Image 1 (cartoon, rainbow, N blue to C red):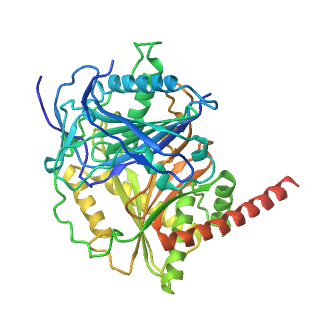
Image 2: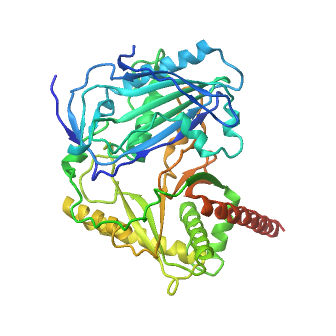
Image 3: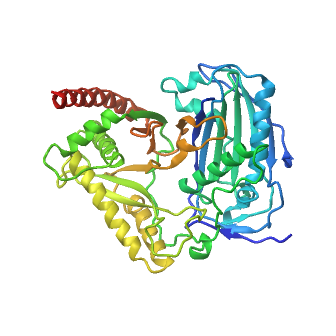
Length: 485
């Protein structure tokens, strides 16, 4: 057995991806086992009891290599497997099968069973295993899926958080399986963002789900894809030299942050599109464009109410570089290939009309895409990344408000099926910075916005959301009646 190092990301921010999946029902090699017993009190549910924790390695040894890396993420998924109550044994069998299929999947995605060495920007493919834990939830999954759950409650279904400040090897992937009394299963996944972006994570979970379906039925199941871990050869990991220091207080470490979800259904989005085109603009915004512009407009208005005047606003919008750069990158590349575009609203120059804000964002995306398409080598891409981080950090004046947006719309997470049906709901837990995450709704025509704000701004955002939601639905209904006459 030999050991190497790999890198499959551009740079190394210290955070992780998190998500929650909920599914309605329609031989493992634990390398390490630790005691894990604690209770998590949920307001509307009985405690969650953490029953077990172990390490899940590949079902066959990997090459024990080391892979260079750059970013970190967390994700959580909930799987509701039954309308009626299942026995404890049935749930345990499902968990055993999930562990077995995970172990088999890791033979192809072996870096995820390794550890991340922060100071070297590499993943050590040492087969130490994915951190996996189980919990029994004395409650009904419907209590979570109905209504708007406080996001803090969802955090209980994730693996234990990592201390990212410590210079110790970190597990690349962690999974937490929650078994509900009703037979539902909540699968919480945390993955370091420097090892995978939303696209990579989706492909891995889909591969795991497909493998889980085939156990005992078709052991020769074709893989979803043959992952490549060679991004590091194109973008060797490095420190971003040239980053300027950020002013104290720019980040919200001392503020109480709250994450809540807000639904924009098909009717609401249609009304927003109509509003954006009402001024005679030729802009025909997409779902993501119009919802992003609307939320940004709301945040600008909240800032205006708080400060008594319109303030300049800087929007950061994450965008995938897959298909946007000229490098010969395999379609199945696993890693983080993400950058951002920025959009500026200036009170004395910009209109706050919805079509104007949507146009600013569309033009910025086009400009940034063109700039990355012109890049001839990795140094130019790193230079653009440094410019971006300075723009939202050290170069940003204190009186400019920063609004972060990320969209996972279009990612086929709702098509994932472990054999118990497709997800009924996909959620994300709390965030450590003010940010807006956009996800598709299950029906596909709506968008669920997960908004993280400080406590006071969240109260104002909720009020404005409720007023706007009622207004746009009424307007849409009036237009629908007129068109039917």
